[in-house]
Length: 149
Image (tube, rainbow, N blue to C red; front, side):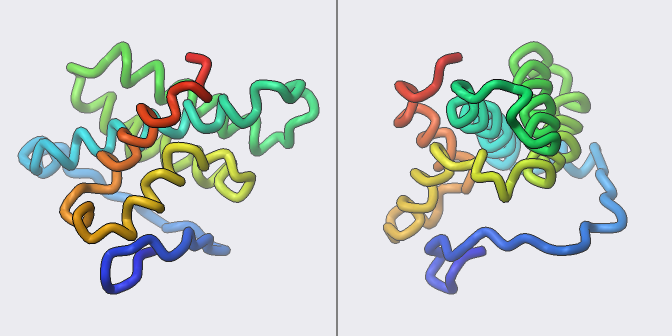
């Protein structure tokens, strides 16, 4: 959630998820390219953030939902890096699987590093025209030393 001046306010969690998500590939393929690139960047960040935060914890000690989120985030990363030309598979990873990562592991603070850079940048009016995903991509690059892969 953002303040009216476009600065990051908070992440809101809801007790009930959406009942339905409709995806129109024809509409998506004609949308601005930056939206697609932002979605790819934001989705990739989920893997890098989650992996960096959990890499020293034995897998069996992590809550089941966190392990599911990690698995989904890894799957998203693999699809995006392997199938980038396959628009439908990439969109499915961005919309369905990445959304599940947040649902499984979001409140466990797995989504932090690159998104923290986004959150800070959102307070600078000069960054308001820059899409969320592109700020997160900058955050991946800015915190690359934290990430192993």
